[in-house]
Length: 161
Image (cartoon, rainbow, N blue to C red; front, side):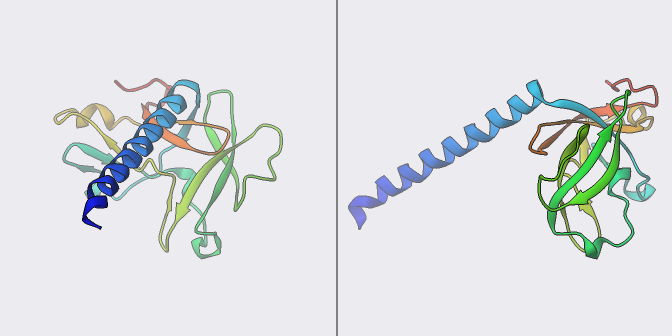
């Protein structure tokens, strides 16, 4: 067994390296080819809105009545208006059915909230004031419902830099 120990460690490191690079390539492709969607931000408890150098985000599309009725994983189906703002149509467990003009955003849920995977926005320390004007979170999405937060936007749909 000792003579295989080095091989096993090397094999696992190579697998980890391949998986890491695959993940990076998927995110880069999503950034390059994904569709920009703006999600209206919902109010967050002001005591936890700004903590250090990040902003905790919550989206209006995740406001629902009874979260216990939702599957733990699924898709939020949205329609996108001319300003690229997403409006929730429904939640569903699978990718189908999907009507014309509808787009998917994958989510996970627990007993108290819905998470689309972009609930924190990190910024340089001392720049919190300019992000207080944020009204929308900008995400890039693909046809499979994967999403990636790309920035915060103001009421005029302009990215806050």
